Image 1 (cartoon, chains in turn yellow, purple):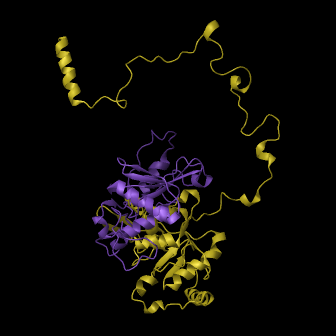
Image 2: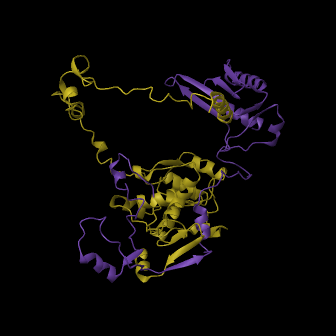
Image 3: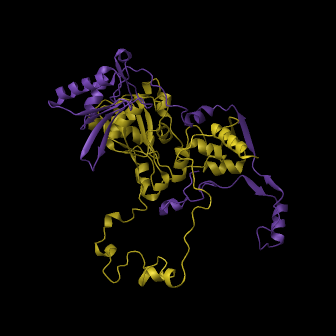
Length: 294
Length: 193
């Protein structure tokens, strides 16, 4: 091929190629030479390791050791209020104001029971079960402006929040989910695509049992009759007329609760959801049914 | 499920690797080895996994009922994420303070479009360790200079002092020196944006 052909070919290639920029150029081949470790009198010196000590011998001291000084990490007194921090549960907050804004902007459907799955689905709230976060703490900011009538299930709520929701004729439940269940609730689609059977929800740990069995905190393991008594008590404490939810048009929706072993509304443990074929696989075997019902 | 490979937290390490497989609170009840296959395993001890034969005669032990078009499918659909951010249906009142955009705002010589989250694009930028506060109005369409004048006069009236602004015509934004987010959002609501 003559040089003229090469030039023409290059030019025709250039026409089809993108414009040359800093993003798509690179060095000529073999123009960079890797540095060699020098030898002998003028190059073979310390090779970047320095003279004497840890640097030269590569025997670095343990972290925090200050060559005999009283180390910094021992110099300050211990702070016992941090004891057990790696075991404590964390509940990232969601305010009532934010919840009302989600409802106003149709991010959550008021005509369906609201749980952590629908709160995360809104895209406004997020949490990380692997960082010891165990779900929503609904806080009282915006309790005065909150007017929605909802059936909500959160993981932690204060007395004022419970009052704010029940004043509007709503229902609130506090429910515990173990971290595995929270992974499912955070991203149900990903779980369904994995093709696994929906597991059972685990019972709360010993230090959380009291909260989730108490009617005062509207725990999901509390006696329903006790809860209705506490609802009346709270309305008298805060001075509002408790709306009779039995007369509501959406009474069915307000009564909807999950089983203590259930993770998703309407879907039982043991079922496999097939998103592709839009079908559900339900176990028939007695052994399986017994396992998932206990 | 969620993979937590490189987490520093001791708690998270409980889930490392395991979450993609069988959940802790479930059991692997899908399949079970038949009697023939078990004896094949026990007959000889293989020192190497690679040299051991494949386990045969694995059967599905548990029966499943496959329900097509199940009535519970509505519950599944409820859990699936939104394809797009839903449009806001008109309501009688919005107690949270969110205000829907008005139709009459389109006739103004300038326009401020809502973000995809239906919010007004006015932001506060805090720089130099909280010393400099700048309010930025983005997504401006139409006569940006006229809008700048209106904002300036509005802020001067509200605060009884001159407020410096900067107009970026190509970037379609205006920056005001100071924290005026709430006032400017109120102004935008009054204009119907």
